[in-house]
Image (cartoon, rainbow, N blue to C red):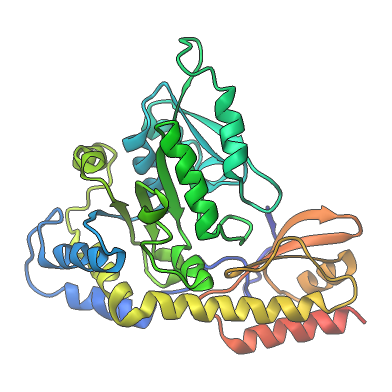
Amino acid sequence: MQSNNASKQAAPTDFRSDNVTGVAPQIMDAIVAANAGTVSSYGDDETTALVQSRLAEIFETDVWMFPIATGTAANSLSLAALTPSHGSVYCHYEAHIEVDECGAPEFYTGGAKLVLLGDADGKFTAAELEGKLASAHIGFQHAVQPAAVSVTQAAELGTIYSVDELKAIGDVADKYNLGYHMDGARFANALVSLGCTPSEMSWKAGVDVLSFGATKNGAMAAEAVVFFKEELAENFLYRRKRGGHLFSKMRFLSAQLEAYLADDLWLNNARYSNGLATRLATALENLPGGKLFAPVQANEIFIGLPASVIEAMEAAGHLFYRWTNDGDNVVIRLVTGFSTDESMVDTFIEAATKFSK
């Protein structure tokens, strides 16, 4: 993934990632408010307890919640709770845990192997998973033993697993006694797109542990590892501490999560960014040579445009990532965020239209 370089002057548009956004004002206010007075440390505070209760309400079941500052740590520590060092984790070949986390899952699990699946749409099927497991040499001492499966929701290509697809994968995981992990870096974006409940998209589909993302959708630096089975969470306190991710001033992580969940901020932010992505994709697809590389189901767009258009957009200072080549087209990734201004979408469309003539 190659980015065009940012100039010292402000770019006319910036669609490189939802990580380039700032912090939602409500969350920034909560961080400032949490700065008052003295509060018990290491998560033994009222705000952390409130987040735990709120997530239990949202997911309609008991949960065991652990604030974590980064998605990489949330994913890797979650998998460590599911996977022994001699185990294997089944995931898509474009999964964050495979291509974006610098071997952290292998490190935190003590060397577990990632086994790759999937098609070009960013997802894999239950049938494909079961096919791989059928030839996994289960019980053979010379082979790593299947231990977990991980899905990303929304997936790295911006596509979304349906509830039925998630359930089908969960059924296979249950059949083979695998732990089931969901990387929910864009959980809210997927949820509002499907229109289902958080429980339907997680534990009711068989998910054991969720990396519940907030940073991409308005937080400064806050995720939550959410367990749906108490026995899996029993040793997580120690894993988090040993892994260097137990914050002494936990209140500042929890304050972000509390504000994120209040008044449906997390859902409203996701609806807004998803809507902008749909509008931008529709306009670009209608340009000469415009071709979507993957369906736009959340807040990521993968679209091919003629190389001449891409080069002109880059020269004009527009910021985005080149993804791959598709015939005469260059496929780029565009990501909208909770704070993306509608005028930025208009500016990008106008420029792309001009350079397409």
